[in-house]
Length: 361
Image (cartoon, rainbow, N blue to C red):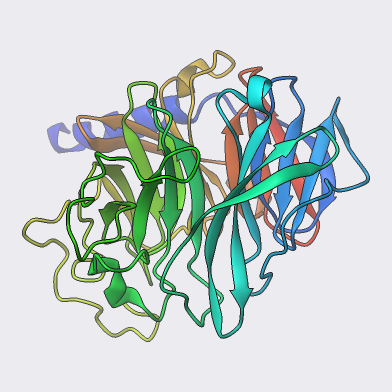
């Protein structure tokens, strides 16, 4: 009996983390592969569609006409219009920030731009950053954006799939999390800014394809990324940190071949949590509302392959509880956000994508 006690405790903890089962409502539908959701101060929502459309949801209704003035995107493979993120002082300056795939089949890259949103269209578009070098693949863009407390912007990149060795090279943006100022400038305290061979925007390296990125109120940064076959990771991001890819990984190549014989490596940071088999994590949020007391302080992770919302409890730098919610719905879930009302909002990933709202039963 004594040997069963740890398993019983873990089971009870998982049940506590999962409760209560949420009530699901459809807020909007008819969205073509929605990728990112953002709330504006007036309570309306912005949603990106990967084909290059930016949509508005106001008073519970999807506005028929997309926002005008969105920059042209390279909509192929995993590329297109990706993240939308308002400036922290949006009420005063009306800036919104976009990440998107730019270029064409032979040369494309993740690009970050900002523009002023007047409620109908984007104005005064400014390109802030285009990742280099360009690549000839339409996958592994990363694309998530997040604000640090000092007003600088984190940009999550990918390795381009065929260029994974560049995740360890300081002369390449590929496979990195980057940090820029709100106007696109380079912060003077970036970790590699004084290295002549380095791209000055690099904040951390050794990433495969970062898909979730958040900054807590205390400035702690968390990110998750796709592994190859297995080895999806949740990481605590620190300035200058090296997260191992492709020298250290818990996954194997899609062919079954080894990527590396190492799951950890000297001078590289270990993940907080690994998913094998892969769940293909897609969105990331920290729950700080009151509607779901059992989720207070938990990380919320949407999954594409896993087709569920994963609720994670971190304690001492490790995931000690994990519950799967909505797994019975068999839908690919892309983004997750906690609304100003304390409810949880999800994007489903399909040609008939929807915005879902989770509320207590």
